[in-house]
Image 1: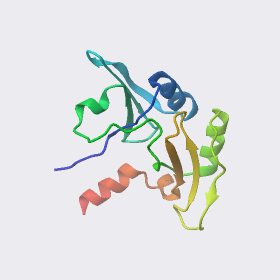
Image 2: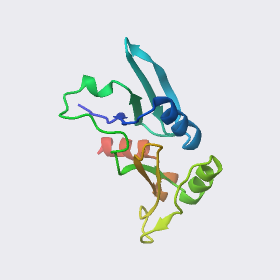
Image 3: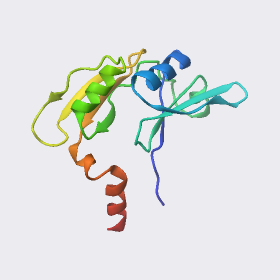
Length: 147
């Protein structure tokens, strides 16, 4: 049985502000923006090319059995991957996102990062993984499944 990670709830203080930020500044696609059951609005956004989305909602954590509800801005280390970090940086800056300059920690593929935070302070990194240009994740996963 396959278990796929497809949605990560993200704690935010203002759903509309967060939706607009991720859509307009980061370029995520809005998949859902609706009241999915009485009193529960969900906004689900997906990065271009990703199989995993983020979900913003005012009642998401009421459905799960966690000890606490995470505070807006408490998530750190969320990570996106791109094949060309310089092109991604240029696109994000053009969109008006405050993103750090890329930092190369070593010349190895996968060792260059840049960083940004959302309006609540949730922290993201963007990793350059050049191999994605020739082998997208879905191709690598299909190859692994065939082994």
